[in-house]
Length: 529
Image (tube, rainbow, N blue to C red):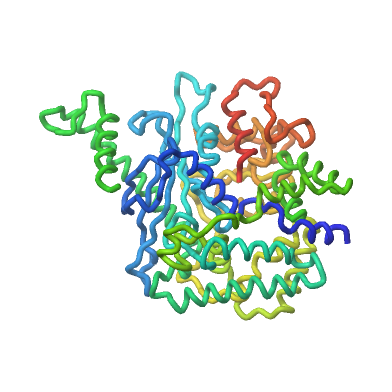
């Protein structure tokens, strides 16, 4: 009863990675950028043509086939992937350049652009060579992020609402309904609301497939192929770098692009030429179990204030993190392009429906009672976040678009290099026991066990884990277990309620010397996801 009441009171609170939050964060970054970067200003290309963006980041729009297999009605259409990178601290011509690390955003429906803008520099620090690299040896990496198909800055975008105001109103309505099980009527309300949105949206894409057809091409299979293309285009860039080396060796007589400052200067000059040419408390609990180190303290304060009949801190928390912004008029571009256009910003969370429903088996036509029974099983797994997770698949019972390419397995392989799986002792989403299953499918795979709570390694701050990850990217070596342990185990350096807060200075742990790695780990914990 207590948990149900709290969930009902707090269904409008923070979601860990909502597109709405990410969009607000990006808008703030854009506002701080004197140049106010516009993705539409970049002409898409089948190779990377990088542009300055968001201060010292680089952005590009990579054009890829909408249908990689070429069997559907969309065989001749394309997708324009929004890609951002944090450049390595050494030029690509430097022997220490290690290549690109591509981050795959979660969700589904999360923005990889926002992910890298917020934490890409910290990831670069974490994985690249540090002060312990002898004689200046070690690798330095570019960090890439991208918005997957249908998401945010990648076009075409999955759009289920006519504009941002309609999307905000729907979010307020959804918050008021709560989650399945938060009241006697919540299941009926959530069932009707989410199905209505999913049915109307998916039917519009099915019936108007001739417009773009994107709803059939957002599955993980297609996105995985996009990631391969990102790597292949990056490798093409490296071949392009050879142009600079050969030009410099050829000299000014043989190469009109020659620059006495060396190959890097030649490539920079060519790149500039190209650029110029192309121009709820339920959700609070969810946040606790995802990010205990970061959220325990503030949540404890909120709960204490509520117990004292003071809801001001909770109201501030909701306003800052989730409540949609309706204090604006629709822009001129939206009024010009019309409802459901990308300019109107009605894509809030819609891609998550399309991706999740594409990856799973069809639930279309599943009855209300059948789904209620499924929801009960999910709720039984966790009284803290079970109600939220029970909602995720509901839209699929009314989602009509089916994927042109869906991968069913098998999920086993002998990879070119052994995979390192990392898991926390208590993870509410990807429990560590799943690693044992994954390791069986991938020959030679290793494991790092971080003895902490929360979702993903950035839920805590552990220099031990940071060193293992850096070593893996620097040398490819898998961590070795200590005596008496089956796998490598790392402990956290900070714990909830030990004076660690989101804003306070966090001194380097005793005995540690790599301040840059420490700052990167703390930074990721505070800003991701």
